[in-house]
Amino acid sequence: MSKKGKNDNASKIRDIGREALHRFVERFMVPPGSAIQLTRDYDPASTYGFDKPENLDEFMRNSIAFISEYADRLYAENAQSLLVILQALDAAGKDSAIDHVMSGLNPAHTQVHSFKAPSAEELDHDYLWRCVKALPERGRIGIFNRSYYEEVLVVRVHPEFLNAQRLPPHTLGKRLWQQRFEEINNFERYLVNQGTHVLKIYLNVSKEEQRRRQLERIDRPEKNWKFNPNDVKERAFWDDYMAAYDDVFKHTSTPHAPWYVIPADKKWFTRIAAAAIIANKLVEMNPQFPVVSGPQRETMLKLREVLVAQAEGQAAEVEALTDKRRGKKNKAQ
Image (cartoon, rainbow, N blue to C red; front, side, top):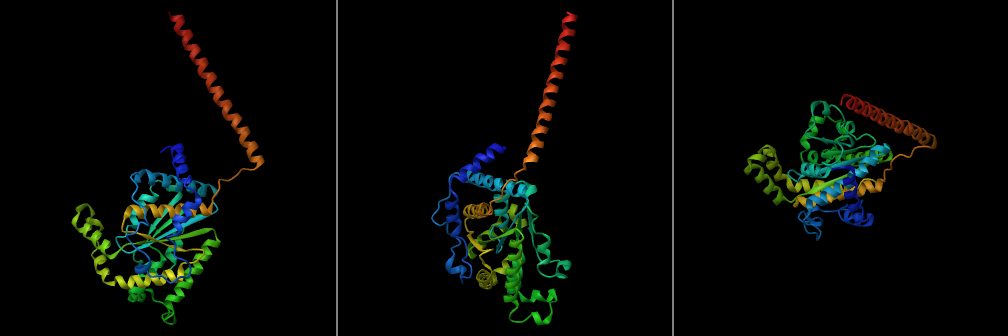
């Protein structure tokens, strides 16, 4: 897409208005300090009264163009960065959301990191270490597909995983999870203070929709590669994961880094909501293209004259060469 086309599409989204965008996004935010229950308070199949747009592809292109415009500003400004954390249970559509929402952005402006089970080297460090190494540089958008929140989710559901971390015995008491919540909150506050904004999104898929998608991975050969037998075994711990997420939202949805819960049973709505949340955050950050100083502008204008003169000189050379060729041709005749 041309730069002009991207700007035209971005203007269509801008016409919706910042207030309308904020109102749409606000419904997904977990109010800081609130005690919520995913199964009671958030419907994975909801679209909040919105119908699937007939022009969904065009709508997403416009949304991506809008995000891309702000990503260009962020990169040029080189003062802030945005960390987007995506958490979800298996088959909720994290990879799909990343593909559809971030596909149109300049690769130089974005970084995507997927965190699997920790390696031996990672287990030799603190649980934040591997994520700290992958934080986005100034001017960039970093996306974490899973994150340090696994340490208060999957590790909490499977506390036997703590054995491999070889933690000091006095840290393994009843306060372990509360301690980690405090550490994560302090870490995120530190990041925000340093200019790295933290945006946390949970893709809320229902147990039934997860079952359907896992069956699809078995029944469709082109999706067999996505199937992991362990994902089916983990379904036995569904209630434990729901309780763990409830506690995470209660203790780590903060004013400086709130959580957003997006319905994930309908992928089209998940993508629209994710794009809107990211766009709204970038609008809040309000990155700006740098403004050059007076002396810098004077230098630029002088160099512009040089470039224009070079073009005029080249045109004169071309004209002289053309006249010369015409003279030779006339002489030959």
